[in-house]
Amino acid sequence: MLCMTRNTAISLAGLRKKYGDNDVLRGVDLEVPEGTVYALLGPNGAGKTTVVNICSTLLTADAGEVRVAGYDVRADPDQVRRSIGVTGQFSAIDEFHTGRENLRLMADLNHLDRRRANRVIDELLERFELADAAGRRAQTYSGGMKRRLDLAMTLLGSPRLIFLDEPTTGLDPRSRRELWHIVREQVADGVTVLLTTQYLDEADQLAHRVGVLDGGRIVAEGTPAQLKSRVPGGQVEVRFTDAARLTEAAAVLPEATVDVEALTLRMANDGVASLRRLLDRLEDDAVAGLTVQSADLDDVFLALTGYPASPEDEADDENQLEAVR
Amino acid sequence: MSTRAMDRSTSTYVVRDSVTMLRRNLLHWLRYPSLGIMLIAQPIAFLLLFVFVFGGTLGAGLPDVPGGGDRGDYLVFITPGILIMAVASVALGTAIEVALDMTGGIIARFRIMDIAKVSVLTGHVLGAVLKTMFAVAVTMVVALLLGYRSDAGVGGWLTALGLLVLMAVAFTWLTVGMGLAADSVETASNTPMILVMLPFVSSGFVPTDAMPWGLRHFAEHQPFTSMIDSLRALTSGADAGSDLWLAIGWSLLIAVLGYLWSKRLYTKVPTK
Image (cartoon, rainbow over all chains, first blue to last red; front, side, top):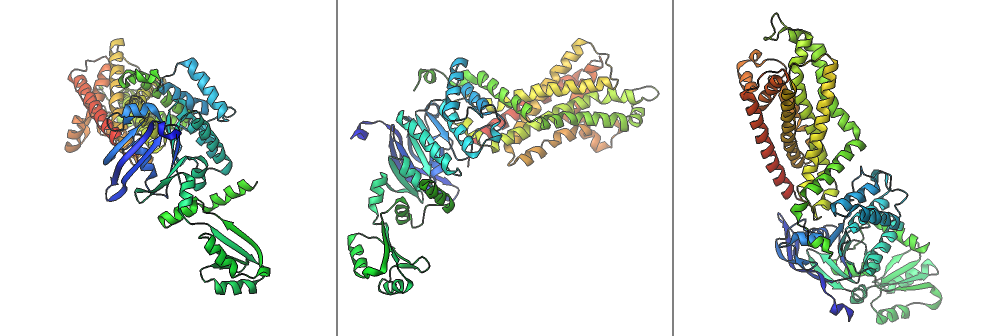
């Protein structure tokens, strides 16, 4: 496979970090090959940001080996800093500066010469659809624009490795899609991405590999497809013609959940056997509709950690609406 | 990795990065002028208050003027103290700016960039020194408009200016530390108030001889008194004598302690 020949961009071995009595990371191991996207999936407080902060030299680990872009973060922090870029969920922009001035600031700190800087800044403003707003203060930008500017500032230094810490948290669906598009372009150029997210669809969309971080450890890892196949997951939903038929069916299927108003009955889809068992118990003319859903990363998450992942149901609903449009 | 990144060492860029950060600092003042205006107006408000409200009475009590002084004599007497308040006032603003920076997200970006670390702080200090000089100039213009006249020559004024710059550096490093130590912008705007208040308990507004024993003892030995006495001597054409060395010593001490404190706080500030 192609992956086997690639160099390792990030490798963590036995990473541990404690804040007082709070054991945030209890031995995290992971490897990210160059030019791939690795999504670290986990609920709030799982330690995702701590992993990013350690990899980006903002924090030091209590134990474990961390190599980023081939350098040990403890021994060669400056080398690591030269190779990486970070965009987090809190905007790291100067609100009193205009969009162009923010990029100028980054160009100066990256010690680009003036002519090259102007060219790069114009390109970035164009590509991130900020050209029209370039002369306005960043204070006046929308959430999506701020995040785009933030990412543009990160990319100005042409890092080969970028950390995106919950890059789309708090963004509207359109802005999320735009950001995903930019990330894909970067990956196409060979950039390695470590992404943390609470959104399963984001990991599904972008990542080559997903690691589920829970309780300070990676509890599962694999491609999105591998993870989905690991849980039996999914559900069967049956819609009935009337309430009487629904009650009848519910009586012989005690494991099912019943929604009387919607005239539906739902149960876990454990494979063909359970599906056959269900169908055997249904009268032909009682069924108005039948849907079988396979497992998604939500089910994987629930099965692995014991609680659902999505923190904001509204955001997910919006996404579904967006997908329908 | 680019060759540009390979052959540069962090320390080479201290000056360049500091200038970049200075530009950022000055741009903030242009974009958010109300803070600057407030800080510059503060010493001028005190100047007007003391000259016009208290000046007549306090001037009459000045001991060194034969037959008692007037409002004009009092203006000359307090101008050095007011100049130092201008220095302290801008330094207060620096604490606020630093705290604002630390609570914002951009500081994390600076920390993980391969830049001269100290430039994040030196940008504030250089900016504060320039702004202090501006505040001092504005204060002097107001004093001149009110009738302030000096007998000192160019040498005296240049020395006074040098001392003011040194004090600006000293107080700014102290307030950079205060800004870093503050857990919020509110705290950062309160702690440096001591620098604005301390000149009142010095030789700045009344001769220390008029104070009760304990207070007088404090007033005579606190740093502001040697600084104010030096400025007063330099701007009136007199010899500042040992006061000048004491003022320089205090300034250097405060600058070094403030710098070390700030550096320590900046390198250990937790990011969570």
